Length: 441
RNA sequence: GUGAGUGUAGCCGAGAGGUUUAAGGCGCCAGACUGUGGAUCUGGAGAUCGGGGGUUCGAAUCCCCUCACUCACCCCA
Image 1 (tube, rainbow, N blue to C red):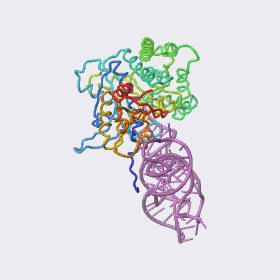
Image 2 (tube, helix red, strand yellow; image 1 turned 30 degrees about the vertical axis):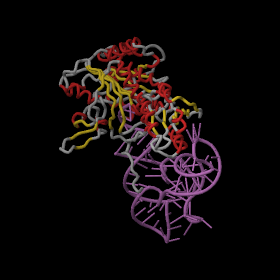
Image 3 (cartoon, rainbow, N blue to C red; image 1 turned 120 degrees about the horizontal axis):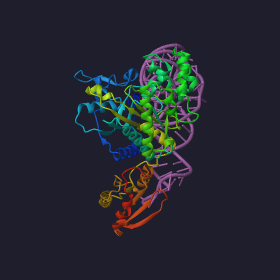
Image 4 (cartoon, helix red, strand yellow; image 1 turned 90 degrees about the horizontal axis):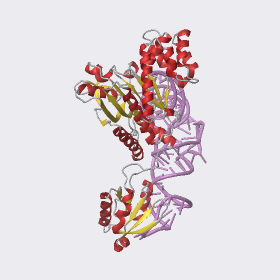
């Protein structure tokens, strides 16, 4: 083993026990997406490089996996699911609008791997294309809320902000033209490094005391009262900011009507999001424990599709980060223990008895029960029970010469070792309740 | 891309230049228990100490390079 085989850096294998958890999560997401009327879409892992480039921002562009195909064409692995969606919408102009799609698929980023961040990871996106209404934005947030709640998350915070407000804040503070992004990047770290940390960083970047001071006049967390009402008066002269404030007020109202409790949302003026293409409301979800960064992220991007089609089409959406969500759920113990989906192991006593075992397994499967046959004609029940135990299969159907002669099956419960004899004809009826298509809680 | 740390059997992990023919635990295999798992006992297999080069009479132990992993920065799910 001079050169042990391994998966590429930052990319991982998912063994069955892991895949069961991931399927559980994506299954819940798919159900929620479809319940809200989003339809499935898939796109290639590879896009032409020019499709991907110049959409995310200067820093992010460097993290796109790029290479040449056999024909010398510059291509790249998709960096997210939003840009491919924009491409699709531009390419198929006849899609009825609003177009609501979801996509659950891997994306790639050539970053240095770290806690909660991988080079290959899955995003679960829901986006609405063709509506400028805040109904669409609120719906996206409701989808995120519903999905996380359905997974069993007891608490999380969806942070809301608006790019239009951020622009207004920068203007109010007197941030020089073209320096807004730099300022906002620092502001984004507020919850991480604190006000002092952000002030220090901004001063180090060369911004004046007055600029930084005015910035924090606006960013000051509320002692009481309403952030948006306060901003209304502070940014009274900035039409765009007023617009953004109005949007958030509307989102807030709709969210209430959609049944999303206020405790799960927070207007957070210091939340920025890194991607360039956002134009209006932006959102992300964080959990207190464990600290792992955001588990969802999204926002409105009214000009992205126009880059491809020449005609702007408004859009809004959010992504749910599969690996981070799985990581958090594990840390929180939100997964029921399950190493396998198989509910019953049917034993094979010997060559002569094997057909009986196969017949039983076939009947169980036809009834929808996940059933496995032990794949050897010898070895004894000892080995077969040890196998069931190791795999975590909860039930074993023992089928030896005695049972076959008596037209019975011995059902053994692996959890407590209890056994009972069941008439051969009643076994399937007895186990029908064991139908499983997914992880059970 | 920048910085720091780690790398010893499938996994965890002692050893820190010379009785190391490299502990121990988990797991694995076999037997006690030839129709019954998870407990216990006994025995067994499995490592040229990430890879390459160097220093030395002697290297898992020191130096250099390289690869991988972890953490932080940047950025982000």
